[in-house]
Amino acid sequence: MAAHQGAGGGVNGPQLTAIAAVAENGVIGDGRGLLWHLPEDFRRFKEVTMGGLLIMGRCTWESIGRALPGRLSVVVTTRPLKVDSNDPVIVCHGLDAVMVTLAEHLDRRWWCVGGGEIYRLLWPFTTDLDITAVHQAPESTVTFPPIDPEQWSEVSRKVGDEFDFVSYTRRDDAAQEALRASLKESGV
Ligand SMILES: NC(=O)c1ccc[n+]([C@@H]2O[C@H](COP(=O)([O-])OP(=O)(O)OC[C@H]3O[C@@H](n4cnc5c(N)ncnc54)[C@H](OP(=O)(O)O)[C@@H]3O)[C@@H](O)[C@H]2O)c1
Image (cartoon, rainbow, N blue to C red; front, side, top):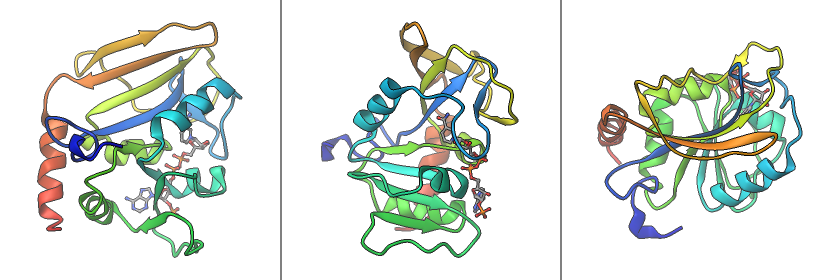
């Protein structure tokens, strides 16, 4: 990605985008994997995140099962996690470590790729949303945080048969300020 875009890809400051496929009832998976198979969505995920830094929880890391090529995976866990030293993977044992890692990778675009726990952990710092709104409502307790229209402004929507691609941006700059402050605190 172009280095001039700056921290996380933002032109006017740091940008952290949560990317998720979300059912009508907010469900994103069953804790072990996804509840649908949408090849077009996979292709788009690969395309838009290529070159970026992907923050994910340990459960999502295990459900993917490998380092995603062409991207830097940042896995959040409280456990000692063994990863292949040749793989582009950084293990972070908490939010502070994630912020340090972001500060060390200002040239990449930053993505929060889930799952439910990690979307919530990074929600106060999330400036943008890239949502595949899936036209299904499967039962599960693993969900995306509610997208409150008072806080999020819809920027674009591409309507499809099985799903829509929808992007949102925060109406205020609180998340960007929180991100900026946290990066400064990380002292890198
Ligand atoms: N539809 C989508 O777009 C999408 C995207 C991603 C994932 N998913 C789905 O979401 C499900 C997984 O989500 P999930 O909520 O169960 O798990 P998750 O968010 O992927 O991972 C949770 C784990 O993250 C670690 N963690 C969380 N907060 C932490 C903190 N403050 N410090 C250190 N570690 C922390 C813990 O790992 P330890 O237990 O190791 O400490 C925790 O068990 C799967 O079904 C997956 O397929 C769907």
